[in-house]
Structures are given as C-alpha cells and as structure tokens.
Length: 616
Image (cartoon, rainbow, N blue to C red):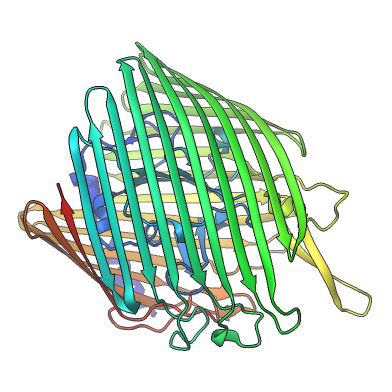
C-alpha cells in the first residue's frame, strides 16, 4: 500500500466514530476491579461490544468479534472452529485473561494457558468487556496484557425467549434458543446453541477437502433475591466441540482424513452478594474442567492420541466500600490448578496452588480528576511469589470540554501453565512466572479522537527450547525461562463520528506496532505492523445497512514468510420484519480475497450467511 493510500485511509479514520459511543444506555462493567462500575470509573479505557454489535456484524465466534478492536489481532489455522491465536498489543493470548460471567476460561492444559476463543460462540452473549494493559494487580495470572470479560444474557421481567435459525456458505447451519423468567425474587435463564459446518480444508488450498466443525453450547443462570440486601446466583456453562483438522506433520497434508479433535469444557460458579448501605461483599466459588483429545498422524510416528486435561478450583471474597469521593476494594482469593497431559497412554502431571490478596482504590480528587491505585500479593506453593501494582490518573479539562488525558503504570505476571510445568526442559529446575512492566499514555477529544501509546517489557518469558545432540540430531525439548527482555511498543488511534441528520455512523481504529521483539531483538511472528478497521452503518426505523473493511499490513510468519498486506470487505444488513421477527444477512470477504493469516493454512473465501430470529 503506497503512502498516498495510507494517508487517505488515515484521513478518513480521523473523521469517524463508533455508533455505540453515542447510542448506548449507561453500561455497567465488572472487569475493572471485580465489582460493578460505570465505564468512566477507571483510568484505563474499557471497550464494550454489545449483543447488537455481534448480531449486526454476523460474528459467529468471540475471536471474530474482538478482531475488530484496536490493539487486537487474530490469526486462524483454517476456517470456523480451527485453532485460533490472538494477540493484544503484541502479547500472545496466554497473557490475556478471558472470563465468562466471572468464570475463568483460560485452559491450564494449553501450551500457554490461553482461552480457546474458537469454541466460544456469540449467540448467548449480552456484552464483551475489554481492558488492555496490565491487570494482574486485580486478576493475577494471565492478565499481563489485558482482560476480556464475557457476560451472557440475563432475563427481563416476566417470561421471554427467542429462537434463531442460521444458514450459510460451506453448509453452515445453526439453531439457538433461550428462555428466561424474572419476578421480584426469582430469575432464571436457559440458553442453548448448536452450530455445524462442513467447513473448508484447514491446510491450503481451501478446496482440497472439507474439515468440518460442530459446536454445542449450554448456559444456565439461576438467581434468587432474598431481600434487597441478599441474593445468590448459580451459573453453569458447557461447550462441547468436534473438529476435523489437517495435521501439518502428516505426509498426506491437506488430504489427511484421520486427524480430528474433541473438546469438553465445563464451568460452574456460585455467588452470594450482601449489601448494606455503601458496603458490598461478594463470596464466590467456581470450578472449571477442561478436556481436549487430539487424534494425530505422522509419517514418522504413525497415529497417536493426545489428551489434555485440567481442573481449576477458585474461591474468593470481595469487599467494597463506596465513600464520598471513590471506592475501595479488598479481595481474597484461592486457586487450585491441576493438569494432566497424556500422550499415547503416557501421562505427565503438574499442579500448583495460588493464594492472593489485593487492594484497589479509586479516588476522585475533583469531579474532573481521578486516581486509581491497585496492589496485589500472590503466594504460590511451587514457584516464587509476586507483588504487582497499578497506578493511574485521568483528567478531563474544564477549559476545553471533551478533552481529556490519562496515564497508567503497571506491573503484571504470568504463571507457567500446567502444560508448561509438565514439559519443562530441565525438570529439576522449576519454571518461574514471567514478569511485565509497562505504561500507557492516552489523549482524547470527545468521541472524535482517542490516541493511546503503550510500552511493555517482559522478563523471564516462558518459551519452548529444542535440544540437539552433538551430531545435530533433534532429541526433544521443553519449556524454560528465557534470559533477557522482550519488548512491545505501539500506538492505537480510535475515531468516531455520527451524522445525525441522515442516521449515518462511521467508526475506525488504527494500530501500529513499533516493536514486538524477542529477547534477542528479533521480531515475533504473526503480529501485523499495521492494522486498520473501518465501518459505515446507516439506520432506518426498521433496518440497518453496514460496510466494514480491515487492512492487515506487513506481517511475517515463522521462517520470515510474509502473510500480510491485504484488505477484506464485508457487507451487513438487518431488518425487523415484524415486532417479533428479525432478519440478518452478512456477506464476508465479498471480493473473494485469497490470503493466509497463518502460513500454509486456508481461510474462507466469499461467504454469505442468513439468520432469522423470533423473539417473544
């Protein structure tokens, strides 16, 4: 892309604004300090993706939805349901905590402790909260690059429900149903979804064969209000998937008809809330079970079965007090993590416990200026303990209404995953958590323009190191802490504009990575240097029309192979056929762009999806 085009796109970006920044009712979020807050009650910016955003844009997975947010990039090893990696400000997904109704979704049995966003469908979601930057001072491990908090739908007063049918390209079909009830005391919500596709070949070319995918999800919430001060809620979520994929080690490559995988993830949580005036306490207990089975084949090792299992138990007590100029929060936590990796019947196990206490305080110096401070202490039974903190300030100008500045400095850590502990390179030398120091500086003017500069440095990163004998023959490998510092530095620009007279809404964001380097100063793969997202939406009383575009700039994969410099265009249409029936049409990659986000793996071509929803 030449400089003229770059300047034109940048100019257009500076004349745009997110629809939701203007239209949304006040939104409550919980990812700031584990208590209910407004969007303004943090020195960090919080981005919210609503259920309306998800439906209008036809996002079928959470990975698709977050791919449009400034500072976030996503790569896919094939089509729908295939392995997905995402990066937040250049950091890998193991450094991002993902929650569902407060339940941790990060799977300790994965290679980096990531949450598997490719298995999270969007139909049952009310909103997605995203905070970028170090948040370990509140959330502990897996939060050094940010937090993604997913909130499922809650019932309205009375009895309500909906039924949705989806059909589209690659014989993709889905059905989603929910029913909810709420009165003065009781609330209950049941949501179920089914998604199935014949898919495309995971390995390029996409026409080689079909790698199908099936996703079955169930979400249940039950709450009871004893009185205005006491309530209890039970949450349950289960996701089961079946995936055909192509094993890159197979001699058959894209024609591999053996490699497939099953997964079963189950989360359950119980919460009790007590309120008395300005004091609020919350006790919660949760458990997550994760099981993934991969059937692989190789010309060297033949057929193999790999089973990854993990269990996470968590207990916590959160106390908060609102005073005249702010809010103070004191939290206590306990986590027990167990993981087992079984290769062809040979198990390798790892486990550890984590106890923590944290203190958070938001103080409004004046109505225009607020200060946020957090500090947390984590104690582990297996490796060294950690202290993390955050100090932030935000100020809105009185002399220039709409103009504001903010800054945050933070430290964070990421504990080894159970998988990394079980497969470390030197068993007698235990891995230690990686440690992040970073800061961000932001400036904004109303919703028209927001600019954020970030700089993060990571010490003791955990990575796989291969081992060779004296003849240069590969003899194995394992995870170890890498000496030196990796560095992530960049800028995010967001701009929003609304033409009220013609109901036209424009949004854009741009991210540039100045640096995303390893300890030896070499570039980390799969992180685009430049990402630009644009959208235009037009609304009438009963319908909406949208155009979105995403430009991915220079990006290289392993072996310094280029996978960047392309633009994708999509079209979206929604219409209220009646008060109860809504139609949504989404056309993806309308110019049938051939591209690869991971070298050697296929991506969808031109595709069309239609969904009809009946609500009562």
